[in-house]
Length: 266
Image (cartoon, one colour):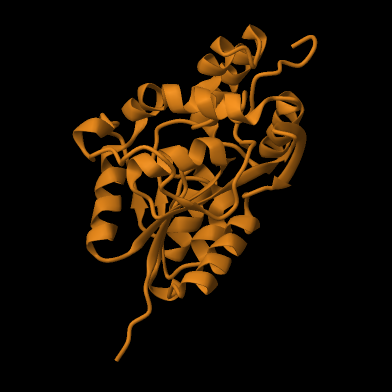
């Protein structure tokens, strides 16, 4: 008798790490000449609003438009270089200890771990590698001649997250009814509904209400941990198979994923 493989699907921001992954890189992007001080301040404010109240559909849409415009003309290689150079210092202290333990438990149970994030691949894939994820799903910005055009090629948000999970399950043979999913946001209800074992993590008010109505467990993650003390870092170089990669993030203020050419007047 053969058994189909299962997986655990994790949102990233406020589920695995304690803030927006993209906004966490606003200062390194400013230091690298990608964004202005004004944009950094705007991202700090957006981060605060996101942490306090979450992000509904309208807020996400406004941020998507802002990030698309901001990143037009950025050099992809420069963005990746900045992320690689600053990743451990920026992200390492933000990872929830409880999330790392869950990832370890799912791996020990033989499940693949998949990060599904609206943030861009240039940020999500390296974080996934740090955490030992098997696959990532992330937003992708259009790239022409090594630079972002400002257009979004693939937007891993809301229902599209669920679509991506089902597509990956088709490709990898996952039994979704016996798979797990974790998220903090009501915008990820479709993602949570795609599996048999949904969990709300540090949920916003609306997701908490839905979780209570549907009997989904509610988890509270409160303990950021230095990742270096929990998991060995993988060897350098790409270690992930990325199902949608790319570029913009959707949560908040200044994006992470683009590069060097600063827009006039920024």
